[in-house]
Length: 426
Image 1: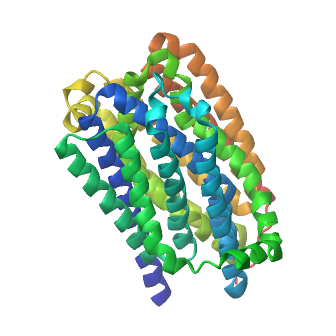
Image 2 (image 1 turned 135 degrees about the horizontal axis):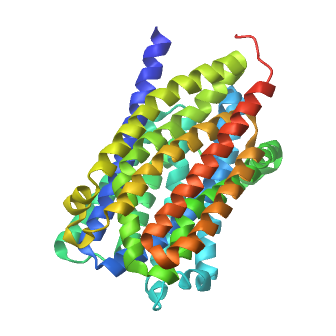
Image 3 (image 1 turned 120 degrees about the vertical axis):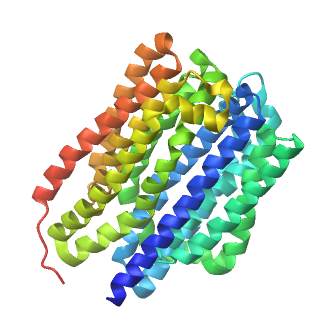
């Protein structure tokens, strides 16, 4: 009974934390969309898409393996594992910032009219803080410290919204200012969380990395496939916005981003599942084998899936009303974009749940190949639709990619569970 109460408390904190983060992301985009010209908001959306690409790289290479492998270690071995993975994340954040410093030409091609030059250092600062804060919050969840995660995100989100709201009232919102604020809020939250991380000193960190090379090997064994899968998933969900930028311009891209942000409330469920389900699924597999894993995933899928479908129907059923209510009259006439942005969450949910099962079973290679198929289909359809359909063609291509991915992963899950030997419950 006590164990069930503790599990329920952990789930409640996890959902509350993700609700806070998703609400902050939603309000951030609302403030920026209402305070900037539409073209400037489109440019911010493109740079934010690049940030999401960095997060996708980290998720595949570091975070997803950590959340699947972490629960399989105990006591001192787990402490060593998480310490080494934290050092990996620090190195990754420096690498991302370095890429923004030394490879500005790549980012300049994304932002037209020389816009990146004005915000280059803001983007460097924001990118390092943004990816590192995303890792730290997932680390707390993996280690079972859900209250620490909530406190960490509370500081980050409160600071971001307070400063952006102040800038909006003062009429000082710009792309560069938004990046400085997001990076600064992340940096301050990270500074406050350092006492919870217990990081080793520099020389001790080097010795730990060398002595614990087995951690890097296990991370790479699982992460290499998840890294590729996340890159392909980014191509489907966000990369198409970059690819279509030359065809439809920053204004229509801003509309797509605004629609995605509006239905982003559904991300509360998906991200809460990402924070909770992978390590729980791995624990169920270790404790009770295939049957326990199937029971847990089926129960979780039915409950969360009902919420996803219901909320998607709410947005799709009154799309034009929601767009004008939240963003104003300049977004009227784009109901179809919001409809398909909402529908997309149904196959996206199936895709996420199926990937949890495959990650727990160690079948990351299948996730990668399914994502390659989805990306190829999505890009191919975009090439056909975007020249004639514009922004709507981009959203339709995204939906097609998610559906292809979900169908492929379901077939792989069915095959993997049949092959996996059942374990006696402990």
